[in-house]
Length: 357
Image (cartoon, one colour):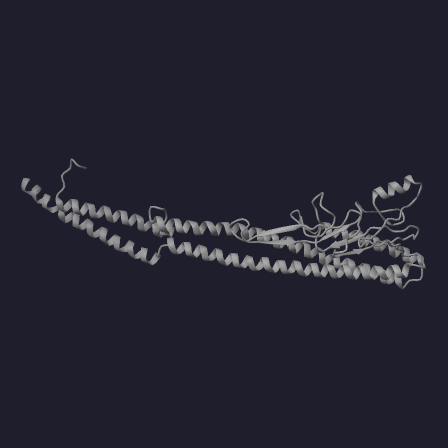
């Protein structure tokens, strides 16, 4: 206080003790937080440089989440493809059994099994989605038949600077909703309604399942263009009473498990379609696996980069705890010495007091 007179020695010791106390407070803060730069006041240059590094690391951590979800989407599609190959294998077994059977009734029963497997195959392509993204089907309404889903994975903290575009395949039927009619034949609701209105008790409707692997699209009628990479599986006309519609590759067929004059040629054609379809699944699965590898590599790189950024930020702000501990010990000693010095400085005043006594 200004109205209290202190001797020169006492005031000098008091100032020294105040400085020591301030340094002790700062050192204790460094020890408690582990950082020598806790705000822009401590060191503006280091503080803002470290903040920029930490901000970039945080943005990249958000990208890591997206990469993880992309890998899950790819794995979901690949799992569906693996299951589809199992169904295709079962379909081959059904066709092989039909080829070796001379009983038309047995072949009719096998034809129904074949058609049901085809429905399940298409169902797997619908179910191979993850969080609304399906790399095996074009889910958006209004798209050209055969178009594919495009998934973009972001790698850089700045949106759009570093990306990977993953093109899916499109596995779809050339008809709408699929069901089995009274004879076990594949038909959709509109076909059944149309047949009944014409006085027909049953309808023989081909259902062509196609896999588009280049995204160029199919025309609405299921007829492919010359430059398309498309394979298809045709459904079986079990009764043999109707001509099947045009298949995905643009050629007409009458498919039958029953007709003794045509079933062998038809079944051999089915085997070829199944083999092409299976190989297309294998090729597409390889591409998905390659994309998983790319995203995984980028994921590992991003993790390492985040660690590098955070380490760089720490170098600018972290305190040396050994050094800070030594500083605190030295300050405690200095504080004790300052207290003793202040006591000695006050002895001159005490001697005056003894004279008055």
